[in-house]
Image (cartoon, rainbow, N blue to C red):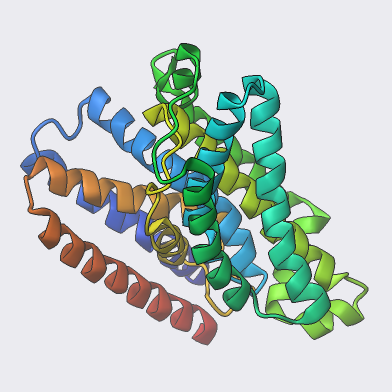
Length: 315
């Protein structure tokens, strides 16, 4: 009984820290606990969070994707270009999602078929996709969307931001896939020991391709919603998103070595970063100081998780 309580406490440590930070901000940051501010936090983390759920699967499988920020910028520019060229918005959305899927598939195929590390391929795509975004737009924002398109990035459903609803739906789907399906078990197996997974009959290459493709499509989804929010395709957006996304996944307890992690943990990591940024903004902390604080908190969270994982292995 005591062992079970201890294990539960260890799993909940980041939740406890998050609650403690929220309580502190509730007393120190003006209007932190207002409904409007909490919805603003949810909206601000939703687009990166959508990608983070895909990145969780990628990292659990033993891979990494550094191109997601550039993919967001490129797909946002792509849909703007398609609409400007006369393609109806709905087909343009479908085309953009397919392009995102194929971009991730490309990384996966190079990894599965030619053993090119995903780190290398995605690093190349990080600069390549950013360059493609500038080529598509000619270096200038494309503002060609109809007025209603803004709803996808700035609209509300029953008072809840539309991107936040998509964020929660993607969370639910990813949580189900990773916890209640054969696919989820295969992802964990591949990340834990790829050779053992292969000998057990799991197509390890296919699993890696699928998780990378899914992440590429989720990046495209975020790119569409971001372009809808700012009503333009802009090649300079989403810079550094890949680092924020990976940080959220690691804060949530996913191991960079692969084989362990949870979608729920990533949800906590995403909200953790969103709350910290929002709290510092409300407290008027200078932006450069915010970068330092975020770095310290992220490193601290990772160290706490490492200690937590070490205790779990020893118990």
